[in-house]
Amino acid sequence: MHDLLEAREARFGENQSLFRAVNERVESISDNGANRSPVSFLCECANTDCDNQIDLSLDEYEAIRQDSTHFFVLHDHVFPDVEAVVEERASYVIVEKFGQDGRVAAATDERRIAP
Image (cartoon, rainbow, N blue to C red; front, side, top):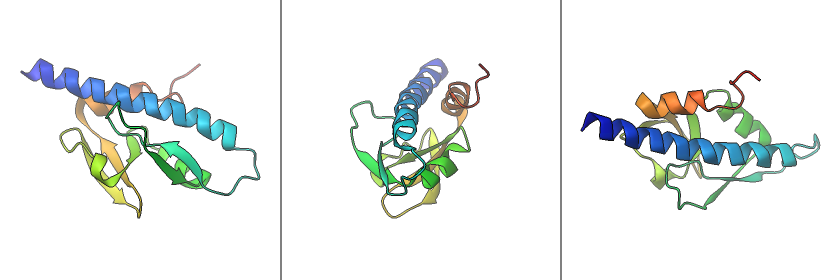
């Protein structure tokens, strides 16, 4: 049973890390230095079928990305068994991954992996 839970948590972490990787590309395309309007990013929830978007400024996105275990998701897209809400915003929440899910998120963070 413990192995199944860890496998599920790892899968959630991998799903969210995939959405984060896509959002890194969105940011790089949007970051032309003059863009101060909100950018539509993918919800970084663990649901692979989710295609919802969340509008963030590039500064908001960067602030969240400072921690490898933090992700932004819609209010009703929180998975409490693998993440905790650390901050609530008007249109989304910031969650912190823990356990195996958190370890996967940290290990797959492109910004933290040495080239």
